[in-house]
Length: 88
Ligand SMILES: [Zn+2]
Image (cartoon, rainbow, N blue to C red; front, side, top):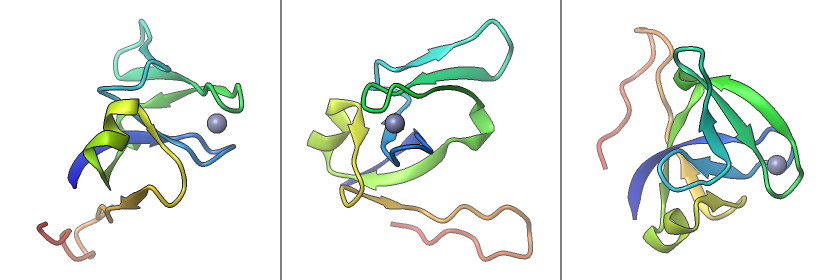
């Protein structure tokens, strides 16, 4: 199990990994990307700050995406009042 950064398709809840998904493309705008979900055909822009770390099996990561139940979301503190994420 390793931690990889991905973005969630909010329609079908699939995680797309920035390094291996073919559905993520950079846009001309700095820090902006486009996610084109191959499953539900949803297309949306997102900022790189909205990507989150997920713990997944390597073979799942290599496919470029993870369905519900195939990943563990890792909590990311949004402000200093939250606890830091636990180390693996
Ligand atoms: Zn989708």
